[in-house]
Image 1: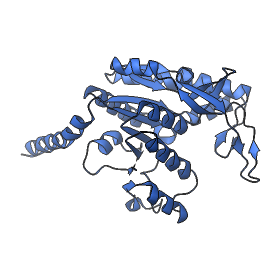
Image 2 (image 1 turned 120 degrees about the vertical axis):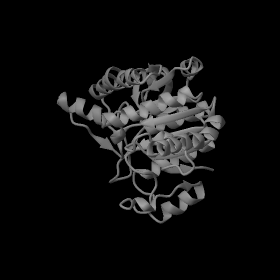
Image 3 (image 1 turned 180 degrees about the vertical axis):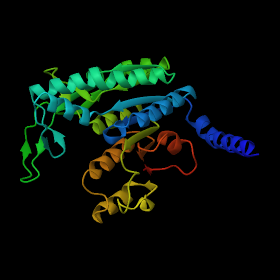
Image 4 (image 1 turned 30 degrees about the horizontal axis):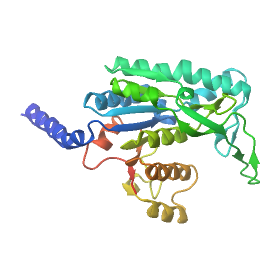
Length: 294
């Protein structure tokens, strides 16, 4: 009897997902993963199985990954100290070499191989083949003055030709957050959130999904029951004034609103530590994180 009940529940889950699958067929989901969501291997495997599922039901997933903690470790192993100004990594000649090496030879190929192991098809793309950028200054938090932080950039334009070919061939593009500097052609280190937003706007993604180590936007970060399930720009402005949205969450929500105004359908902020969080957010009636809409 219990086995029959379990089977019925499983069927109900599939039927709940059906209208979402039908609605999203042929559309693009841009998924950004980084930070703590990349630390536990079982959770990364869970995410990558979600991505394979998306592709299998006719949705076009595109993955942009970070790598900050792996880069910090590689720098430490090389005897270099990681320095940050306003949340941006100071990137000199030695640092940009480690950034490129870690992203291109460690993180990106590992994600590609694990997607393949989960039964999917994937191709690793260096961000320098996709993103064109220009250098940006950091802001000294003590003085508010602009500071030179080296090979750090913002995305000016995206060349999606390789991404488009991969998607057309039902292959998942896995893109690293580095850009080719316009003019010098030097490699620039780009914040992965910024890179994901730029690519999502260019692709006119139906969804831009940020995986992090928090449930979403919460009125009280220590109380999961205060999760705010849906926000729009007016609500975001009010929460900023109240100090509820502060610190590192401000650039995330600002980037989210910018993406929406640039043509992205909806932005989701979800906890990558929850197994199958992408499926739970996108294919269930309740979802699990915060959605941001215009």
